[in-house]
Image (cartoon, rainbow, N blue to C red; front, side, top):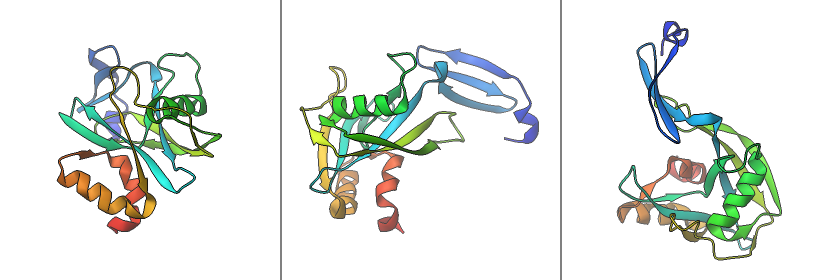
Length: 176
């Protein structure tokens, strides 16, 4: 976007329950309504296994391999990142974090969306339930030894599973 587009007013082209499409100058993009952001959770078990989830994603038309994640404040106004991350980790994976550490705020695809997320690390996790998300999510919890991640992700990709871009966090050294 050029500097001149940055000074243009935002025009809402369409707005739904959770997202809206806007135009600013010549640029069109989408964002979440109401300032809701997401928390993305890196967690590993005491045995050194990374906790991942796989679930069907409607926009992709297939299942996606991801780090656990969820929205902050979508149901509870004023909810903080750490409490949302802890809630989502337990809901999706059945693991409870002893401590949540915020690592920073990142943007997922800044050329197309204004959405961002806070990356957190869950420390001292313990298994307290089955996970799987709520009734509509059908989340599969997957534990992968850190050393096996590149081969595991490659096998999932070959099997037709979408790989979330945030998985690059775990694959960086192996890819380079």
